[in-house]
Length: 185
Image (cartoon, rainbow, N blue to C red; front, side, top):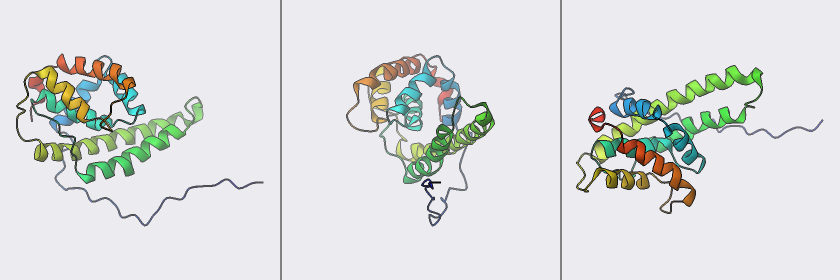
């Protein structure tokens, strides 16, 4: 019987050091929960995620636009490391399970719950960066311009693929129709 190859995780990697004063229930998290429920937002974000976009970066860009702030695209290394080592690992584990097999439903649901908790921590880490790196109001003219500029800054590369156009347009429309006063820092 052939032995399958198994990837053994590198256990020598030290645990992540997280700030003691994280704000999991930040205005960014509350915005993310409300925005995610808007028609078309979830599908658009997930379509972009399949193209390599970070939903956290999209949410940060949108929240900042509604707060009249420009998104620089800069984020603390801890945010990226958390996304890669924790949120991404949980997402990969969930997606590795057969979705059609009923016997894995409870495991997939449990991992999805942990993934949501990891995303909340990721947004709490991002919140800290946003409050440090984006403290000033934007000098750009027009909310729609700021929304588009911020979403473009959330792209994984400087070249935005044509396939990103429809979901980006849907997100821009949803953001333009969002009440901005609900999302102040």
